[in-house]
Length: 273
Image (cartoon, rainbow, N blue to C red; front, top):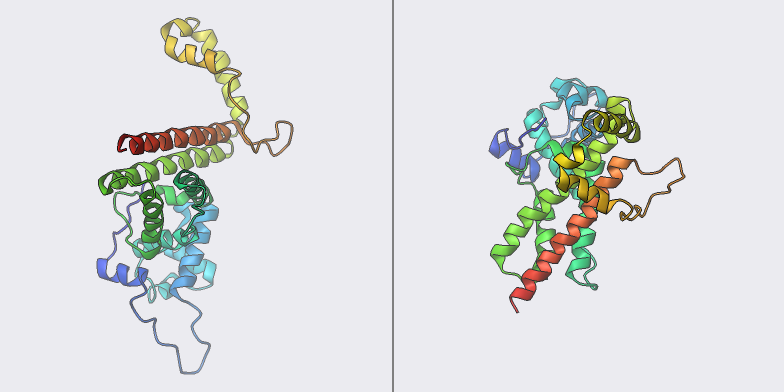
């Protein structure tokens, strides 16, 4: 399910994102002071999305987690659309604002990409928020600013840097989506990666005995690559915590693809000298 940000009232949403509005006045009469705040509501909503997914998110669910009614939330956040924008921007505050650049732009971009990948894996619901409509919040802008600062060290022109931003973010998001899907697959289907592939590979070979002749490029690549794949660095082949097959493949593809992209940046820089 893809959701689009920026569907609430523009001025109200941006005021909340940038905290441009003063909070509701503190209660001065008898009785307990209000415990609710925008930050508390957003934190509860993020916790629900992290634990149960976007489908479980509702104003009522957030209110239940805070021990309040859904109606009590509307004083602080107008509705679910505005809440989604606030959640999306809030979690982006986790991303580092700076990276070690003493080893050069390539090492810094590699570190950035790895950190952003793990950020998406921690919050897979963020991947459901389309980038077609940016949230325009301070933390989203900070993430963009960080990447642009790293890319400027390449010395490439502004027009190229803009397109690189449009390449790197979708690449990392796509890689993170593959990792997130790999983690959900076993629980959602009831079978491990190995069980799924073993059953279907056997059936495919039996039903399509001429597979290699019909798809020579695919078969040739598989034959050439067999035995040439390096083990995933964090995997213990004999341990209970071994990285599942599909996640291992997704992470290795991320590493290889990122290397090719950075090679392309190197080539572009060389072409300007």
